[in-house]
Image 1: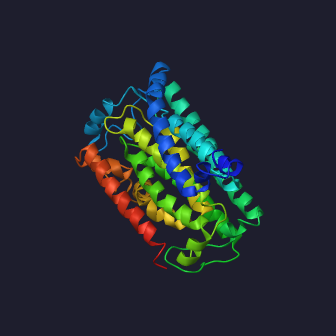
Image 2 (image 1 turned 90 degrees about the vertical axis):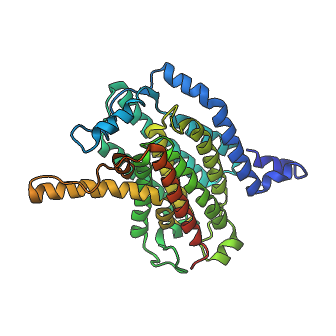
Image 3 (image 1 turned 90 degrees about the horizontal axis):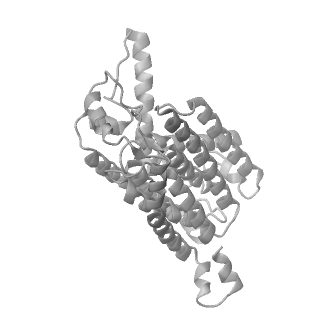
Length: 376
């Protein structure tokens, strides 16, 4: 919307709105201010509606090693409002509407964000109304996520300008694509990236400030990568795929950074509000979609290394438990509890220390991801 001012009034001071760097910074500041301004009112509204976590968290089960200590820690969080992801999604959408120059990539990202937020809201709603840790059926959520990701892949493949994002497969640190003209492989990769990222962030959302802080760090890396992908000169110099209009995704990343900072203000320990699946599914999906649109899905696995570790810990735990139950008649665990952050909590680490150390790991992963721009 504000970009139009530079077209309607092509003279100072309105010309600054044509620069994507200025609009990215403006989006970050706007999202932060909106979050800080409306956050207290939203938290009060959620409390009034009794949208709060009074049920026992699903990751705390009787009989698990250290479950007593974990239950004691989580008891203090009961009654904390959830569905705070509503604030993130609304602020993000409004900010992008104001600052971004709309194109198919922006529209695709925003619409997908709304769909995933709606799915997460439905899941949170069932948990709150039933006061149990079981929301929507996992397979239902997975089907919707796959359908959305598949639709995105098909849409990108149908457009001549974005067909290469699906047909060609690139790997970090390599100058040329490893596969050319492979739409099936590319389509499956798109689905894996979006669905995997959405669920990985959801699994990470188990401690105050953990998921939103790691999302913030990952967004910083993709802000740089989006700007590079959308700039023909930089993309050619750094040997990455140039995607026309991708620089506007830097504005989305800027808005995501501002919204994350604003939400972290209320979500840091001790949290005043939880984002719930409303926020985690949407934010994870947004990161996955941005990675796909700038043709860097594998870089997301690096930049989001914390999310990958959390998701892998769950898959390893579940897989090993089932295997050993069949093999030995009794299920065994690799970790004291999964996802991974709960393993460290069971080992006696304070929550604030776990979150801070995961932030450090996330920063290292983001730096490594950015290094792929030059090391090719």
